[in-house]
Image (cartoon, rainbow, N blue to C red; front, side, top):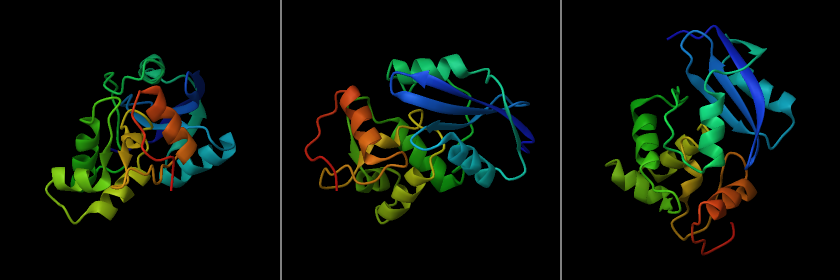
Length: 175
């Protein structure tokens, strides 16, 4: 599918400000970013990830669903999305991650094993790093095999905040 124009809006949630971008024609959400940086930096990232798309300030049709998902800590809220890592491998990783129940975690190694590729631990971490749909694809639930929080696209502090809000038991603070 060719995306030509997207609307974006910054909204407030219980977990902080979030930028939501949605394709005008397909009404698929292509980005949900926690705003841990200047908005201009996030808009620049959108342009880098989608260089042929024209972004305009507007109101995504699924804004209420995204806000509800984040505010209620329910990553299963039905939202029409377009994951950036839509390779067969990326889809496998994201599908496995979406099965992790709220309040639980899995290691990158466990996800690699679950998708039938036990040597792909680093590739799983890479797919998480490319996740463009914060909270909806709950990569914050994926941790290091020793229990360390390791990396998160929106920072370790945000990862810890989300896991604590979901009631996850954390053994270590961060690496």
